[in-house]
Image 1: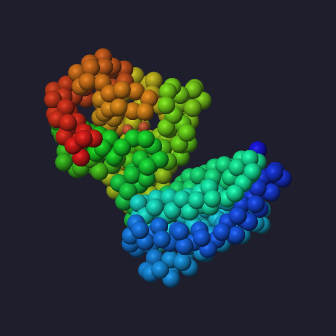
Image 2: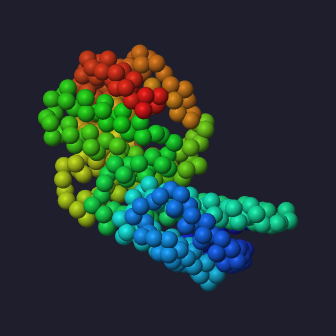
Image 3: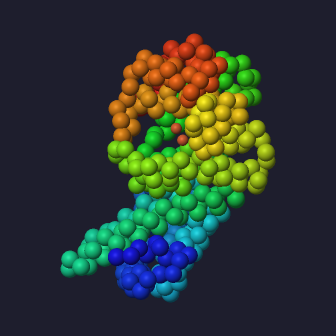
Length: 356
Ligand SMILES: [Fe+2]
Ligand SMILES: [Fe+2]
């Protein structure tokens, strides 16, 4: 069956239009259940700030649901996108935190899938239900992306909150964000880069992979090796991250902290010898913040377990990094890294998954 989401901005097939209308019908028929389930979900998670009271919550949720229904029903080719945009921008304008947003979508997803699960269906209908659920998941994904952009426009951006949003999408943990900022700040300090620079790298570091918000979860969470095309897709997270942070810079101030965030997001996968991405910069063309962050990021990746690999011991990670001096890494930074490697081990142990 062709995908409904292909309808975003493109011509939709007849199949998709029929399915969209069916979805509107299912949602309409069950709207009171969806709405009350959704509101109860808010209440159980005690999401402050979202709605003042139950009546307002009911009203708010009903509006959101009706938006989806009317767009689905009208069969407008970019109906999904419009409904998603409206929801995401509304949330952002209400200064809702990303944590609350996550709950909102989980609630929507849960209340919809309950209804689909409960329906008494034939095999054919089950296929359709699976398709509805897939649409819902894709919807949530798109809303997140729009929300992120809207959030940057209306809120004095909390960069760490944004980084967490990217992390939600990725399989890495917030401990990775904490450890890498600690390693990078340690290197900056030992390189005598000054207090302000060290502070900037510490604050901006967690945003290094913010651009992953724009990469498909299927690729990010794939177990096993990525295909060539998939890897090309992943590489784009540097440029997407750079664009997102430039938007924040344009809207707000050009503080050193934002500039450092931009440099790290854009260039943390460049190699000293020019074999990295996205631009293939060499040596000092790569901002020092990104050269430092590359060491922190790779060390943490090597000593951590990921969905596609086991963790290496500290000594093996140090050997690998040392062997790539002048290729992947800046020799001056590696000199300092080797001097303070025992502190890396201390940070790793202090912020290991079991200790937090
Ligand atoms: Fe990255
Ligand atoms: Fe990372």
